Length: 476
Image 1 (cartoon, rainbow, N blue to C red):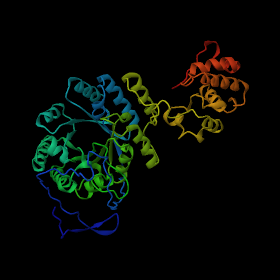
Image 2 (cartoon, one colour):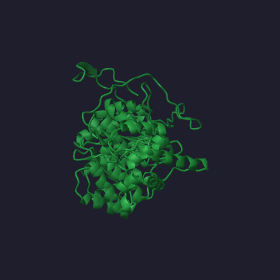
Image 3 (cartoon, rainbow, N blue to C red):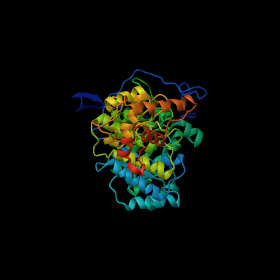
Image 4 (cartoon, rainbow, N blue to C red):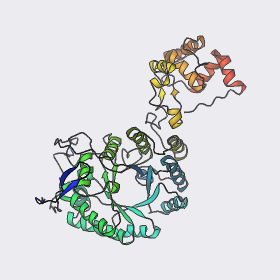
């Protein structure tokens, strides 16, 4: 590492103070890999080291989401059909809205089906999400990009010594030369290289990542083409606690790429995984500390534990910035319904925003609150925002309040006509429920069973709402 003690001073317009230019770092071409065994002992749970160094929170004026549903999302499940991809792409366009909150999506180009889906989506001529591709850092893969003629491609560029030494069996210098050569190939035909820095949260930042990135930024400046850097937290090791040290600090990764390597926020993207339950918070932190783009997949589907859930980032944006920037959040429910119905995707019932039970209550004490005002136990107006009305399921813990709440919700009763928990018919239904569980039942009471009980014990309500057809549509 070489530190320049004679750095230029520049006036920082943000702080109105003189600021020294960042230190210069050169490639350290070590003979053995840096594996951070004190942090990643492998035979133990990884450690989270602190150095008590804080970096400034500098949130960009504009942030957005990019999508990897058709790339990383398809690496962990049976492939979608081309027609399914087209439908999902249309729903991404609807969800992201006209302002491009879902700015880009990426496609494989390897198989005939991949290219068919790619071409069908391209033919829709949507502005957003822009269609890009993804290839490995090889000449053969890059030929595919030339054939389809798109503006941007992701290129796999693994940056940790775990990959450089253990997988590719090369030196840092050899790998850097190879990566720069592929980037130059992309630039030579006017294609924006999006460099996927795989495994960045185990990489030697100042011995490889920063000097390599600075070389990419030189190429970007010379060519006039904005080379992008995707910081890939491949194993979900990024942490957001204040004062954590590199390479695990999300804030540190973003700050170092901006300040030491010179990557503009508009050319910086975070890609996270959820191995340690930190996918969403890591992505949001990347936004807050200066990364314009966050990469995510629908329902979080991706390798192992998955990626940052795209629909969750849409909700997180609204929480952080106070508006939706044109997003149509009802599309989240459409996406959920399509994925379950048409692709066989199994969505955990308790998954936020999309799970069958995410806004469902079973507990009697919660149902009692809902009878007074649904706002007491609902996170927001899920009916208005997501087109997901509040739901109630009946178990042995539901009690009179749960029965009454189920009736009011499923019969769509307004405040003036809603059923109270002291209604005799409610008590009879509750008694029947209790007998079911006293006799050994362990499953929830089905909607059909409850409809039958309402028809027996609240016949006037049943006839008024269901009539002779005996059909009531209950949304789940």
